[in-house]
Length: 242
Image 1 (cartoon, helix red, strand yellow):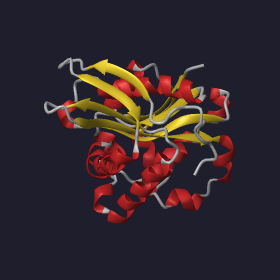
Image 2 (cartoon, rainbow, N blue to C red):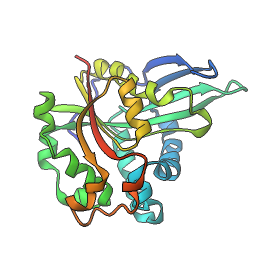
Image 3 (cartoon, one colour):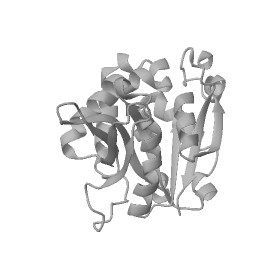
């Protein structure tokens, strides 16, 4: 768990962004994830997100219930930082419903130095590959900061896709970061769709890693068929706000 804490002066929960859907003109808003939605977010992340995301799909994460539970525990730890975002709307019965989520946390240079290989190994080759790619550059030196906002998954419910919700969740990081005093967001985007949304939200490439090189980097990084995906690269992308 990181040493970073959300400033007490920042109201929780806060609504960080409001927008209209691109297709439906439905009203949406993005706010801090609150406890009442945590179980629902964990459900979608652990049953649907892992079926969509390339690293999860090609490592067959869904077939390993122990590893799935470890990811759920990791997400719940992340939620304690009070940075994760959810997108909400009102349904036809005026009931508030969840349509998207983004698990967010702060990475601090001092905490990274204390991070152990055992902690990484417990989450399998997915986190192992991500950590390998992140270390291809000194991220903290590149962004000239000792901390940054990071993420471990963004998901939009299929019935609400096409509304621009993923991009709006990424754009909302600007308001969030400025609000809590963070200067930069750095995230791994593993699919073409995510990378395009990130570009629309102002993110730029920091590291571009070909999926074809995964086993060359480490023979244990086995993601069968990932090199045949339409997405050819894993990208570490960043955005600055101050």
